[in-house]
Image 1 (cartoon, rainbow, N blue to C red):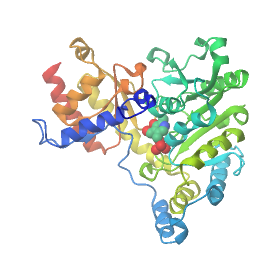
Image 2: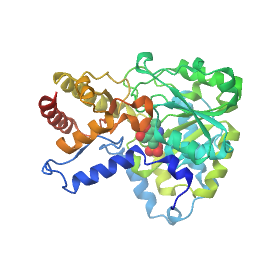
Image 3: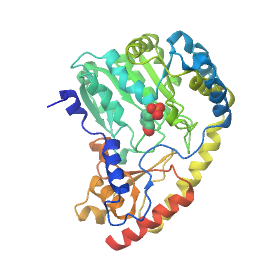
Length: 398
Ligand SMILES: Cc1ncc(COP(=O)(O)O)c(C=O)c1O
């Protein structure tokens, strides 16, 4: 049998499983092949990046440097742009040489960080449910994984006090992120500060995955950079994928305590040579010339959220109103449960019968069982069409 034990432990991720199902659907194996697929399963948006970003990339593409390998030193203009952004966005001054690192997506950063910090068997904590690369990175590092279950009754707030002192002392790192995917809650600065305080007291690295920092629909998104203690043992991951709609370009960055940034950079130096200078010039344009762009995007997602929630309510599907952009986190209806359908079988049936693809919550951990995630990544008319299809299906089955 080809493949490591590690590969077995990773399993087939929720997005890969869904991809197969969508492929099957598209290759016309099912009776309702005439309905085109409406894919609401990935946080991959239909929106375009700001035109200043595309122009900057376009202009740089023809420069020979853009086709060259890009070693760390050459990323300095990008790191300086991050420094200026951090100062403007959070009022926090960071060192572009020691505390900033370019990434090939924040997923890449969270997946590689444990390799830089953990010895085999060291304990790492993740929230459950959480974004798959949080667990995946720990698996790659042969770490022992602890899970902190977050629950709807607590508003998805982590209860750090449920961990014993011994558990905290054994932990080497903790990965989490608010605004939170998949539960679509913004969270609060005090939750992060609590985590950071535990981190400082017990010498645990706090890694905060924050690609949605500019996409709070209600209230302010928290940031680890605003917590006391991050310069000691904190690292935060930001991304261009969501607020600037640049997911396919694979651009993100980490800001963190110098030893953590250095350790991650050393791991990455084995793996990649950084993104092309052309892509970096797009990222610089986003940070410097389109810093307020996310405000436009927020309005679009708010509209989509409100319309989708209303339409779902009309068919009797009560969905909590999300406080962040991008997702609805939908409890599976009780009539579906009483038929013995879980989130995975319900999402399969929905795809097969309606052509609408949603993500089963259990793909994000056991804490996501019984939930479906709908990504608001299509225009309102397509969301209306998707929910109209779900409505007919709902009426026929409930
Ligand atoms: C919490 C979280 N982290 C990371 C990512 C991946 O972001 P990136 O495109 O920067 O790798 C996503 C994408 O959905 C996400 O929700």
